[in-house]
Length: 263
Image 1 (cartoon, rainbow, N blue to C red):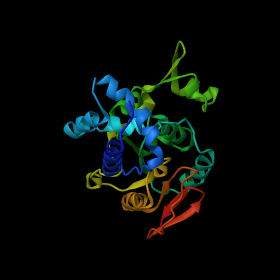
Image 2 (spheres, one colour; image 1 turned 135 degrees about the vertical axis):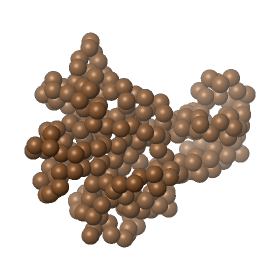
Image 3 (cartoon, rainbow, N blue to C red; image 1 turned 90 degrees about the vertical axis):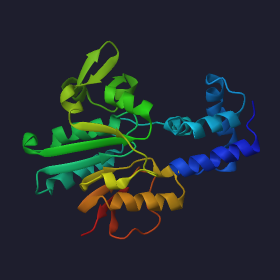
Image 4 (spheres, one colour; image 1 turned 30 degrees about the vertical axis):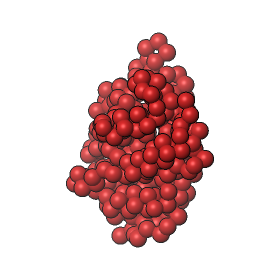
């Protein structure tokens, strides 16, 4: 079943409106192949029927985002950022950290943050730490909250990490409860979400490998919203392939893909 030009344009507009993801006409084949399974699974007659299905049940819209994005992540991704964070943490005078992992996918990023803090903070138990992890996909959040990973999914971890922070069952590695308890998982859309729900500022915001899906206008809007939630001298971390192309007031680059909120 081929997607018609108007059907593609309908999805193109809906995806941009709901997720800020800009799809060029060259993505027609990709969209068709990714959505075909949902047309078949829901026993629909056309892509137009699928479009109307999403319009009628907005609670299922996250499935559309799942279909056209790739949830690729790993433990201790972006090694240079973790090295920089060791130095940054040593400058923190108040033993209090508020951290947000935006677009946390299947959970490797927030769990990495928790493990990293356990490994690198002196007097760890004296610190007041809260880690928020969000994603717009309900299904991927379920996996994240479960905290169970295959041998391939834990490849970025050392044997020491696996022994200290995971329980092994067959070929599955499960995050220990002490690490899970450090993190709160919630659903949040970075483009259309209500940022006013965040009452406190963050010391660190991770928003990695998300901007690649947005056009420049949406990137600028999201970056500004994130920047407003940073306390002074706090950090915004993007993916290695991402950068802020438009100047954002009071935000300056300190090293590759890491930005700091100026006083």
